[in-house]
Picture 1: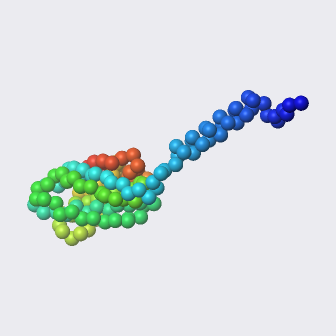
Picture 2: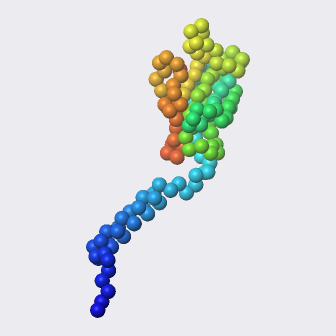
Length: 152
């Protein structure tokens, strides 16, 4: 007498197919290098044409916390600047920046709190009543290696 399986051939085949599907989906979601350092090339356009100024850049993580601040002395009458952000460990970052025209190292504002010096954000969001949320300016470094920021 031959032994009969508890499951039919069709049931075993279906279970095997489901197992392979689950395995394939789990492998596709696997990030092989979660601590990989990423690079981003930035192009800043529409800088104010002045003889001397400094560009201040803040890099924020996905929760909106500044993890790095940089400053770049701009060439006289520069209206465009390109530079790279190298070896960033975060998968998503946000960028906010301003062009310091008077050399005080701070973003100057008028009596209503509106900036009087050129400023910009990653993803060039529409500015309404206050700065954009971190979510609006997040860049996914896993998918993007270049971004352009327009000064306002």
